[in-house]
Each structure stands twice: as C-alpha cells, then as structure tokens.
Amino acid sequence: MISRLLAGAAGAALMGLCVPAMAATNPAFPTAANYDAAADQAVNAFYAARLGAPLWLRSGADSAAARELIGVLERGQLDGMPSGPGYAAQAQALIAQAQSGNPTALAMADRLLTTGWVEYVEALQTPPSGITYADSWVTPRRDNPASILAHAAAAPSLAAYVRKVSEVNPLYAEIRDAAWTSMQSSGGNLDPRVLASLDRVRDIPPDGRSVIVDTAGARLYMIDDGQVVDSMRVIVGKADPSTETPLLASTIYYATLNPYWHVSGELVRSLIARNVLEQGTSYLTRQGYQVLAPDGSGELLDPSKVDWHAVAAGREEVLVRQLPGPRNSMGRIKIGFPNSSDIYLHDTPNKELFAQDDRDLSHGCIRLQDAERLGRWLMGREPQSASLQPEEHVLLPKPVPIYVTYLTAQVNNGQLSFVDDVYGRDSEVAALH
Figure 1 (cartoon, rainbow, N blue to C red):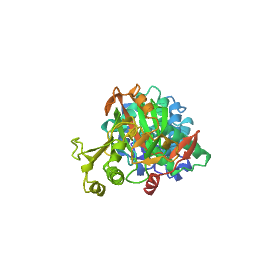
Figure 2: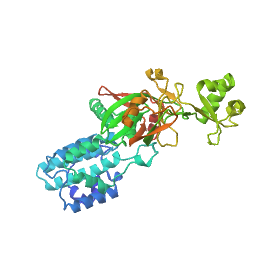
Figure 3: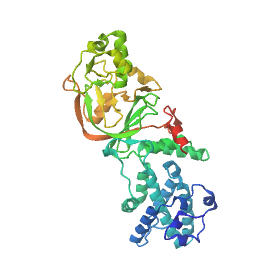
Figure 4: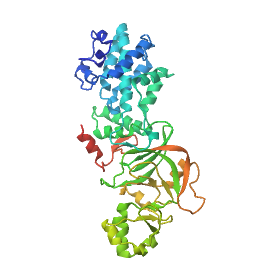
C-alpha cells in the first residue's frame, strides 16, 4: 500500500508504521493516484511555518478536533471525497499507535488529517456539474490549499469549525445526514441519486439570505443564516428539453409590481397567433394583450393589420405583451434575476394547479404559490404598488442570491426518500460514471 503521504517529504517516516488490513483493500483508500502536488506543498509549508507543531492533535492523541474530523472523513463519499473513509481508517490506526507511545505516529497522524482536510474542503468547493453562474455576485470563491489551512489554524475552536464547514447549508446537511443514517442501517449501500442531489446543492453558501428553488421537488425555500425560514410550492418547466427549468445561480436585485407579461416568441407563434386566427382580434382585447413592433421601439400596432398567418408560420414577427390585471399570467408580482434563459419567478392567477403533486407545467419560468409572501420577505414590506401604473420596479434592501437546483433525493420526517427524475438528469450523471 502506497499512502498519499508517501508523496510528501515526511513519507519515509511512515513506511515503518502499520496500517489496518482493511485499508489496503479499500478502493477508496488515499493513494498516490490522487496525489495533489499543490496541496502537498501547502501542507509542507504549513508545518514548516509551525516548526512542526501539530494542528489536530496539539493536546495529544485524545483530541476533540481529530475525532470530529475523522467522523467527517468517514462519510466523505457523500461529500464528494471517496478517499475520506481511507483517511479516517489510517488516521485512527496512527492515533492508536501514538497512544501506545509512538511520537512519530502522532506527528504523522496530524499531517494525514491536515492533508485530508485540504482534500475535503476542495471537494466541497468543487462546482456542481451543469450549473450556470449567471451573475458574478454569486460566482463562488475557491480557496487554495494555503487559505484552507490558514482558516483552520485561525479557528478559536477547531472542532466547532469543522462542524460548521461540514454542515455546508441546511438542505445539504439534511439530505447528507439522512443518507448517512440510511447507509449505516443498510450495510453501506448508497443510492446514486443521493450523490447527484448532494452535488447540485453543495455549492450554496450557509450564511446570509438566499432563495433555493428545487425543480425536482417543485418547491422554493427561503434561507436565512443557515435556517429554512419558509417554503412554498412552485410550478416549474415541463419535462421537455425546450421547456425544462435550468440549473443556475444568480442574484435578485428588485421585484416588479403590476408587471406586463412579455410573451415569448415561441408562444406568440404557437398560442397567440393560433387563437387570433380562430377567434379574431377580439381575443386580444378580452385577454388584455397589446401588439408591438418587433424592433423593440414600443410602437403599438393595429392587430387587424398584422398578417397572423405569417406570424403563425414564423415568416413575420411581432411582440406581444399582456397588460397588468386579473388575467395577467404574471399575477401581481414578477421577480427577475440575471440569466440568459430569461427565467424568473412570478405570481399566477391559476392557484388551483398548486394542489397537484406533479407541477412540471410551465414553459420554464417558476410560478409561485404565494408570491406576496415571498415578496414581503424579500422587500421587507408589503408588496403593494403605490399606483396602478405597469412595471413598478422596487429595489430590495439588499440583493439576495437565488439558486435553482434539482434534488431527487428528499427528506421527509427525517427519512430519506426520492421524487421522480422528471428531467432525466440523474440518468445523465449515472452515464458519466
């Protein structure tokens, strides 16, 4: 067995130490194959600066910080670190030798834990596959190994710091902890849907306010300083590549009261034009639609002078918007955020649809069960407009990050459960492994 430690400067001292037989046959055991030169250099420099002083075992072999980290590493597979259990097993073996009076084993155990901690944090900070960071404000920071070690060394309580970092965020911790309990009771079996879901939610920060939309469970969560403070049902995109709600992260800067509904070009062709041809231009008046020039100038067109056959066939273009009012598909509030897919949150007059279990019904945007409640939480006041004028943009007191994710693994009453993979994204992940 060649430990990852053997790649470092202190490797020779470990060669005479024993490790448990199970580690030698564990496929997740840390080996030279996953050697990270930058991390090893940072660990060398870290201990050189400390003159070799231990970090995790500075009070001796019986250390709360070491126990906390070993427990974290044991479940490392769930956190994107398959080598975690191997690190934990090797550290326990070295600590046992240190307790038998071997000072070299104590130093090597400390270094092993430090190297494992760097790899663990790097795993947590690995970007989810398939996500788009649509706004620079939410683009996550990736710590280098030296920064990871500096933060740990500066922590007033190292054990508490490990707990805080490993919590990640409330949805992540809930799924991960339920999955770990399930693994222990089922002999270690791990459903791949758990890993896929954890990967998608791992990058959401624990602090401050944020909005999380889970498109698999069709639910929105309001997060405040690591706690879920409220949630509601949502309606998300249909299970079709052209209408799926994408994975993305962005920032909410303002809410729009009395919004227009700017109808997409595809819906103008397939829905609006078809209904005008069947019902006449009175359909537009009844539904509160206005027809505008395609150049974006805002010029209103006479619907009776538009060639709706050409619009339906895609030979001509017009813009269509729906005026604010009781029929407006946006309801009374629209909450936008930067993204190239033109996805946004919005109110809806069709509240009866939220009673359905399957709520993948939209053309990609996210309809809110209680838009006023979310608006109140975001704005810090009642989301009421001062007038009936369309499109009143209200800045939030502080920008709020929004994460649109996809979690087929869920937790109900503390038990791990699963929802349908309506977009087939878990199957895509499985095909990559």
